[in-house]
Image (cartoon, rainbow, N blue to C red; front, side, top):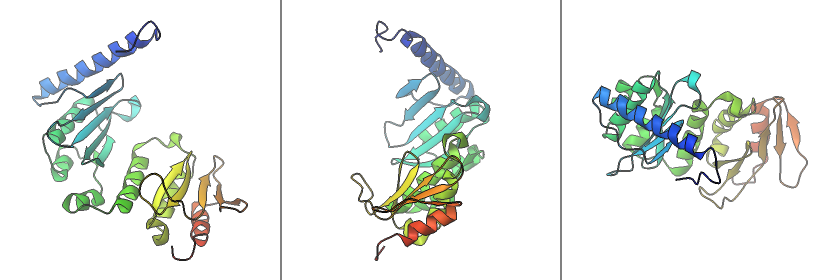
Length: 233
């Protein structure tokens, strides 16, 4: 519990978090479904975990007009995300997932959520780590509001994903700048140029040791990134 002597707003936040948790529990009881006690609870979000498995779920209400955000993961891989029409729908699918539902069942219970084809493929046979990283990053872009990124951020990611030579590398971002690595985990071994989407809609392509080049489209930026890869990549 936060020390209210050093954080005067702590009591209010904790009360709001408790109220949100109580609302979720009430909805679950009304629906007749089992929902575990959240492992983390805030005024606008709740994180759940199945103690028997590595299944996890998140319900977030940060953007009320968009409806509750729901994310479902299995074995540390987010496979489902999207927005529910209301908290009851979010609680229902969360309970189903933590109860062991597969992706087909989730799509039946919650057709409003996004279950990508790659997630079904991963459920059958796990994808390699690089491909999985790309898929997850693209999935997060679909979930988060566009105001969180420069205008060309999504287009940049999708254009890079469409390039076979870049798709073999791990995508890494820092302050919205996209660069590429030959390793899948930190410390990353960077290779090739970096692409920075700017808030005026243009892109800067930075080659190590060279001057940045400004281009108008994501496709042009990605083409320069491919051209800047060392031989063999």
